[in-house]
Image (cartoon, rainbow, N blue to C red; front, top):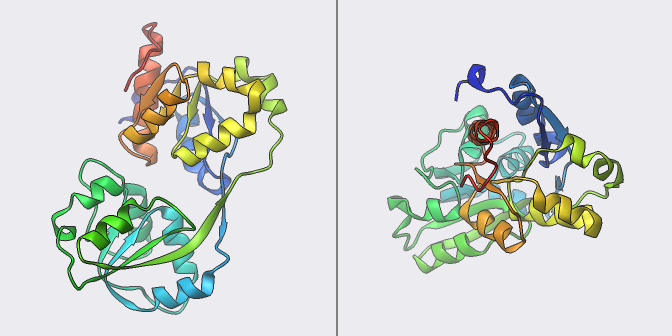
Length: 264
């Protein structure tokens, strides 16, 4: 998407990413003549089980899979004097792949069209894994689909849980007071972020949130938003900033034409 062609005309975009990850998207929004309103609905902190994760990261693996940019950041922090030893390195999404690339690691496996666990599981090298060791680098907890599927395909699966997600304790009242004047679109990048946002805004904020166009980054999120009663849902092609901005730009074009309906 050409940023010069994007004009948000002063519209307010609620950015719910963790505070340390919101800067890039906020700058792009401002660059497109929009207003980024940051309200983190998730914060990332180090895992409480770092010694076990460090031990796993020092081992050799046939495949190492990184679930998010946070997984890359915190994993590298546990190996200040060494390099990860994976015969094949896999990333669930483009932002994760970029984080590995920035750290000097080449990417061997990346989904083609669908940037999630389901997309990764479609790749040919992950179909038959009998006798292979696979390490999934992620936050504490997380979806079981990827690991269970790889085990069913014959892999020995380990989990290096290098960070954990917490819900911020933020007073929503100042945001709610100016919501109708300042918030035109809400951006969320995981169901956990969406759930946290609903909880943080409370009963008073839920009707405002449901009436505001919501951007999500996967079909799974879109279904969850529909189940939660959201009226207008946009679907971005991925979680990276460019994909999100492309969806925001498309939404702004529709708004200019008088249509704020479901753009997904």
